[in-house]
Image (cartoon, one colour):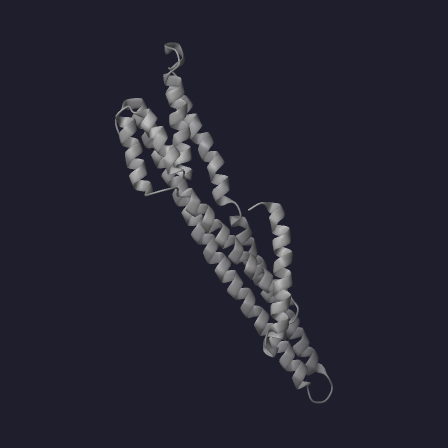
Length: 239
């Protein structure tokens, strides 16, 4: 998701949140306008979750990844680099892009004169590293936003709680009998904002940890597969 797209999306969510707040039951509206910001953060967390799910799904490519890796390793072991590169292009995932870059680099240097083939494996290793460095940021993008939303949502809930309690204590501090309406309004504002802030924070935190785990697993898979491919190119045997 491009950064500039976030501006109209955020504005749209603010408008939608405002109308939701206006159409909510009385006890929800008592949470005050701060709920509009809380709802906006909630919608942004869901949006980032959907966007990351689509990106990671596309990064998986076509077909089973384990079968793909097995087929590529078999092709490399048999010396059929053209088939291995073709399999990477057909699979189309992030792992395939990384492995394909390394194999393509090695194959180009294989076709070079004898004197230029000595560093073919080292060039392939560098190509794998560079391709991995290009793929990882795409998978990690917006994960920091989810973490930030979790933190801000908690603080928004705390701020709503504080404002609500201030209103409650003001109602209790008046001379004579406390203003029951203002007291109830303050308590409702405190509890509703706290609930929304915590719900959003919990969801954003769970999503952040889930996507971070998937990205880490991808990076580990890339490192393992890259090592195995380099070993095959160097020795002709699997590690």
